[in-house]
Image (tube, rainbow, N blue to C red; front, side, top):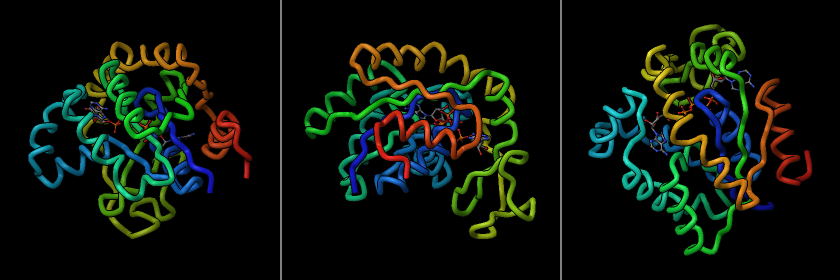
Amino acid sequence: MASVRVVLLGPPGAGKGTQGKLLRDRFEACQISTGDILRKAVADKTPLGKEAESYLSRGELVPDDVIVRLVGERLKQKDCANGFVLDGFPRTLPQAESLEEILKTMALPLDAVLSIQVPHDVIVQRLAGRRNCQNCGALYHVNFDPPSNGETCDRCDGGLQQRDDDREETITTRLRVYESQTAPLANYYRERGKLREINGVGKVEDIQKRIVEALGRPAS
Ligand code: AP5
C-alpha cells in the first residue's frame, strides 16, 4: 500500500473530517484530527481537556505549544507508520514551522497540502446541520447525509448530538479566526510548492476523487 502524508486545510465545515476519514481508509494511514483529540480530552476531563475547554467553547485556537506537543507525540504512534492525514493542523504559522521541523527530524516530507475551498453559505449550511454519534463519532448531516432512521447512528445505534461550537455565534468566531490565522498558510505552502486547491462543493465521493487526482494517485 502506497503511503500518504498530507495536510487538509480549509475553513470550518469545509469537509476536512469527512475527506480525512476516506483518505485514512484508502491509504491505511492515521488521521490526526486535533479537534477530535481535544473534544475527547474535554469529555474525559483530562488535564489537556481542562486547559482546552474554554478555547473550544469560544471558537478560539488552543495555544500552539500544547497542540504541537500533542501532534508530535501522535505522529510517532504505530498506526501512522504508513502515513498520516493531518486534519485541523497546522492552523497558525508557528504550527506550520514546527511541523516542518518535526517532519524533518523524522525524514518524512509532506506529499501535499490540500486546501478545500467552499463558499460561505455552504459552510453555514453544513455546520448548522452537522450531527455526530456520541458513541462512535460517526459524522452525519440532517439534510445531506442523515442516518437511515433519522435519529440514531447507523453503525452503532448511538445517540446523535450537535457540537457545542456549532452554535451561530461561535461559528462566526471560528470563521474569523480561520481567515486571520489559518488562511495565510495557503501562501506558506504555495511558496514551498505543496499547495493543491480542491473544489470542496459537490458530492463527497466526487471531492474525494478530486483529492486523489491532485495527489497524482490512481482513482481506484
Ligand atoms: P476542528 O474540529 O478542527 O473544527 P474545524 O476546523 O472548525 O472544522 P470542522 O470539524 O468544523 O469541519 P470539517 O472541515 O472537518 O467538516 P466536516 O467534514 O465535519 O476544531 C475545533 C476547535 O478545536 C477549534 O475551534 C479550536 O478551538 C481547536 N483546535 C483544533 N485544532 C487546533 C489547532 N491546530 N490549533 C489550535 N486549536 C485547535 O463536515 C461538516 C458537515 O458537512 C458534516 O455534517 C458533513 O456530513 C457535511 N459534509 C461534508 N462534506 C459534504 C459534502 N460534500 N456535501 C454535503 N455535506 C457535506
